[in-house]
Length: 542
Image (cartoon, rainbow, N blue to C red; front, top):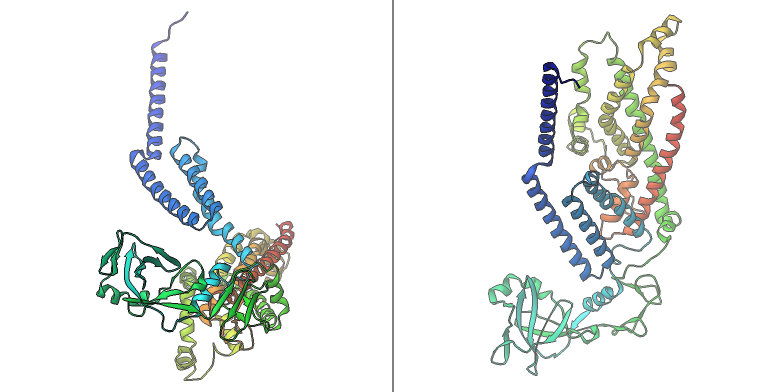
């Protein structure tokens, strides 16, 4: 058996040192990646905050009898804690935050919008039936003539006010907003008046004055039956009985106006309705099926403006893409010419509009196009009175013009890149064969250009189909269409109309707005699918 030579031992020793060095370096990299105790401490603090928010959310949901969402939060939070405090599971540690945000901001939002689209949720229909009944009875309350005075002490606990009252018979009770009076045995008395209660802070005169509006708005039910009336106070020292002019009959499920004798019944529309069709609001939220979609296409006062907005949305999206692409392509061709000098400086100037936020540029253009004080009318047109933003057709032209200003730099950049990627050999071969510059552009450059930019043009069309900020910041969707049953204007596109129906004005119809949102999604998705399938034909050119 031969023994290792000196050179072999030296080589083995050097190899061992290299392995040890690599192992040590790997351990150092692993320790640096794990972050040590600092990262562990940060992880514990972050998870503690998340767990605290989760516990608070679960308590709120449980108090509202929402057990299923509370259970989901419990399971997800427990799983996240197990993942982050266990060894391994590296992919899950990176995926969990993204999946949670995806569900909350995308999947849940989409599902909830779909649910609202099949309800009558909106102004006057935003709660359940019990809350609507209590609200109706409270809103119709009037003070009972010659009602006895209840001695009152306003008390506070955890920022919530309550009435500590002593009735004419000497009984002490406490109650709050939507919290009926309950007997109290251990109140602090000052003569025959209850002035304090353990666990509550009694408000003095200064405290009552500082919170007089909140105290004056308080309505404390006498019992669980809302027909028994409630206590209210005009001065914070005495409370009086108030009864509603509406009486609710739980057996018949009707609401009766004691003054006029009119009976309002639940006919399944989410509100108590009289025989002549008069509704008592607020009502309550109910499932209406496809009624919102039916209204969008059959109710004339909604259908006509909806179709007009839909047509303008297609026109706006098409011309926005077409004008910006043509302008961007033209400038890209000019600046791609080798004979063009100082191209780098011109290119910087061309992309400046793209560097500013779109909503800010829209506001600047809105000021420049002001009919009375705008820069365009006062300076460029010598004091002309051109209604750029208040005339229907000029407003549409102004929107397309401003969108051209904002959008052509993007098209210029992508067209520049696509043109530079076309091999020069193809163009030189075409010129050798006698092709003119226009023939080279039409038969070689443009088809190859579309291979690269067609998907981006489709994406740009979808973006402009929902270009909310430009429309809303520039014209606000105006001028207003006074004949429409919904809040809509001549320059509104579908997304701004949805926003107005849901959030602008004295009434909000979230159900109809959600139905419009689903219609927009279906339209954009259909156009995108068809367009992307058609663009596959361009791959054969490549």
